[in-house]
Length: 229
Length: 382
Image (cartoon, rainbow over all chains, first blue to last red; front, side, top):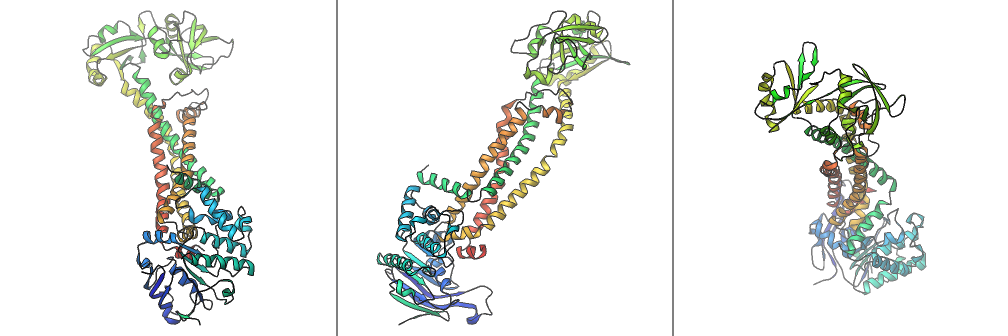
């Protein structure tokens, strides 16, 4: 039984997208396993469908065809209530950080912890710990509106990693980072994989491999995933 | 309640603070609505109950002698004729009427121990001697303080020795209680005559059935009023004025509709945030619970404040406005001491009336959003 993520005949088509190539299918016939304990890099040109694939893997969308299995369970076919609960095991770094304005950095980071067990002291402790590991602890009390692009992205990474998820989807996690902080983010993703998480990173820049120790590199082209030697 | 649940309530409160202006405005609107609706309901209920209570303390039937020229005094011996009717258990002559005081017309009544007990059950009043008066709080002096000159069939100067307690103001506002001899002089009543007869019946439900036989018992034409007649008279008077109060409900209902629409619009505007929470592992149930907690944190205190304000308006120290607005008193409006015992069901009713659509709007929009895929919400919300 696999503890990773698996795509079986996965296809995704945006509604009302008939005029686009591939008859509107952005992703088609993807059969791929993302093993636990590995960092898989997906590259491709802008618009290739990297983010969409990550959203599908994270359970934020349902595939048009095929299915996604997590630990051999067809999570993409589950009813919303079960998928909601499964999503607690997923951490996602969005390309657009989606931080909540009006909340502080620390409050944004602990957002995934609130509906789970625990109490504010524990949330704070976990939040500060991950912020410290991302060299962002000094930002904890600040409003997110006051942050730079790189800082916002590190806060978004902290939010994704705060509860040590089993599945981590990182969309351009180092795009706005200087090399030092990019290595920091890369190291945390590597550590997550080393403790057994599935880590899928989408990036259009090959330099990302300098900062993240990648196990597999796949290229998304014409809606399909191909290994990059 | 677990610490975790407290923490979630605290988090809901923290979320409210991210939009303090909008949420304050929402609380103000809900509170104002609660005040408007509760005031109307409390007033209607309180006036009806209080009037019924006060009338219950009065006689079951009142017999007045009538002639072609109007009212005429009635021989007090007629009480004996009334008591010949089976079912009549009590008959007493009453001496009362209206005369002029410096400020305008006032009601005078002859005091006896029964009347004193009726007006002031606490026992702080005594029967006035000749030349003395007990007056209501609406009676004012224009000359010597403490001395009242009344003008009826003759002129009588009386010294005011006591005032009726505040809680009797609804019934004693313009009343002057005098010694029977002073009252007769002012009304021009001969000894042995009375203004009317107050009758008690064995069972109040019998009162209507007794009217024909009672009318035949007197050798002169009479007009007989029942307690029900009096109740209808007051209800009609309050109802006419109360119709104005109903106008308050139109904007209140419109405001409620707008409030619900505003909540739905705000929730739909929050699609991106809901989508984000779902993406971060919040279940639909967590999100609905958060939204409902937020709604309750805004709604419940606002409704509580609204209910308290309405209670204060109807029962509080500044409640003279009721007399001005509903009863038409232009000056010296009486302080209404209404019965607060019926307020609790009205509070529950209004809380339900307001909370139900408020929570329904929150629940409906939360459920619709919670059922959507997170990425759809995130995309449409941006």
